[in-house]
Image 1 (spheres, rainbow, N blue to C red):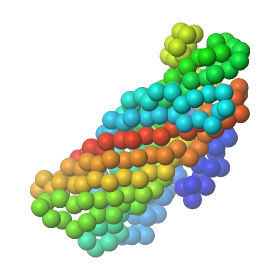
Image 2 (image 1 turned 120 degrees about the vertical axis):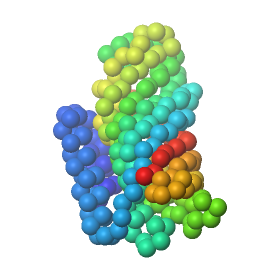
Image 3 (image 1 turned 90 degrees about the vertical axis):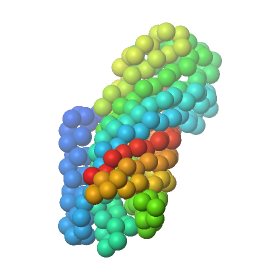
Image 4 (image 1 turned 180 degrees about the vertical axis):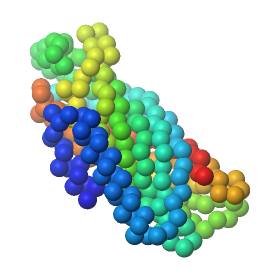
Length: 240
C-alpha cells in the first residue's frame, strides 16, 4: 500500500504540492490507525533529530557524482508495538528532512538548467527539503544493563517542499529549482542502534540509519537520466 502510493505518483511533478502533501499525510494517518487498531497494543512516541551525510548518484553518461554534503532532519516518531514484550513494532511518524548533493556535468557545450544557461562543465549542488514519512519494522532485544539494541528495515516516502540550487560558475545562487526536481521520492531504510532506559517510560535512543534512494529525484527536462540521493544518518531521540 505504502510503496504503491509513491510509485503511482512518481511522475506527477505538476501536481499541486499542498494537495499532494495532504494526500500523503492522510495516507500515513490511515496506515497508522489501521495498524494501531489491528495490533491493539500500546504506542510510544519519540522526538528525533539526525545530522546526516548525503550524496547524489547519477547514471547520466555526461555527468559524474560530485561531493557529498551535510544535512539534517527532525520530527516525531511513533512505535506501534504488536508483541507482549515490546520487542517488535511498526515505526512510522513525520519529519522534515534537509538533504541533497552535487552532480558534476561534462557536456560538450553549454546547457539549460532552471531557466539559466550554464557552462559545459558546471557543477550543480542541490539542496532539497522534504516532508518525510517512514514506515519500518523495528526489532529489539531484551533489556540488559538498561539497554535494548534494535534494528529496522523498511521504506521512507518523501514529498519535496523546497529545492534550491547553486552552480560553481555563480549563475545559480540559491536559485529555485523546483521544476528540475520530482515532487516525490522514496528510499529503502536500514538501521541499527540502541535505547537506554532513563527510568519510568523515558529512554534515549541513538543509532545509524542508511537510506538508499529508489526513485529518480530529478525531472527529465534537460537530461534523460536517473539520479538518486543516498543518506547516512546519526539518529538521536528521546522516547516518552
